[in-house]
Length: 378
Ligand SMILES: *Cc1c(COP(=O)(O)O)cnc(C)c1O
Image 1 (cartoon, protein in one colour):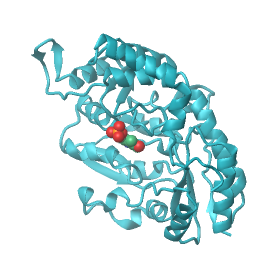
Image 2 (image 1 turned 30 degrees about the vertical axis):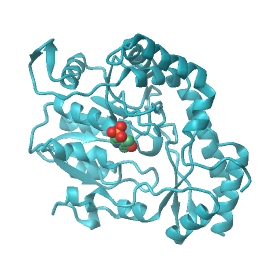
Image 3 (image 1 turned 120 degrees about the vertical axis):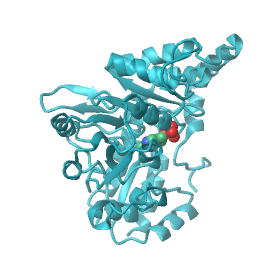
Image 4 (image 1 turned 90 degrees about the horizontal axis):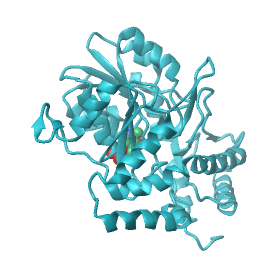
């Protein structure tokens, strides 16, 4: 090993050390005021995030999965309604669709950008379709311009899953830009510790420019309550706790700097693996910048299991996001899903490998990782 530091997929400790004084002071303030539930930091973070995103309403909640669930409840989706999303994503996206008795319609993705295949989306729209859930996977936005056109034409809601892409900017063909999650009907994000804006526990939020929906989401997240002890609809209990909000308030100020650090690491990887016959580096989309939640390679003619083991022996972790497509999971078993409709998803699940990606990767570490990967894939 070149360094005494252990290489990690995500270095939360190194990141914390740099903002420790400010984070500790924020946490201490919550302890001193004992405002644990809905304390001032929650409102402050909400306002800061609304400002950062350029969106009218941010509704904090307990985690990203709740954000998706509350969103689908607020949109009034009912059992039998169909919701289209990608088979190649984290389970939470499709899980809440099934949990609410809605029908998940899984479709394939694009082989270059990993984003939902919009031709497949169009093909799968039926009279029952109510919403599309694009996932801005690994930190890069789906082609939202075309997706919004499809949604408008078919009168569908768009729920952006921004859990991996907070802060990414999307550029429309007229030059206008928007932050990921602020283009559809509602955006849903997660503050899970390893996400690009992560807290030190669980957290999540919904964004929207629609006043009526914002009110509904707030109500549903708070037991369906309109006025204290008056419950108009069935809701859930889903809050961002004050300690997490205090931490997020500090970290939000660094989010752009964090994205820049991730991009520097991605550039280093890209350069080292450029024109490698067996490694396909992530393709940067023309319409979105990339915040590199993950740096995901596609391996060609390489035994992935053996490469992963050899990397681990040299102290380099590498992860498979995601090994099993959702349409193969028992939880989503349905006769409507046929493998021939998912060639890209199946190929990706069998060939992707994500390298360490975080805000604290220094040149020495990057050099060690890239040299080792090059040696093992020569
Ligand atoms: C992390 C993640 C979620 C869920 O967020 P939690 O806060 O863990 O509930 C949803 N969708 C995607 C794409 C994710 O990566």
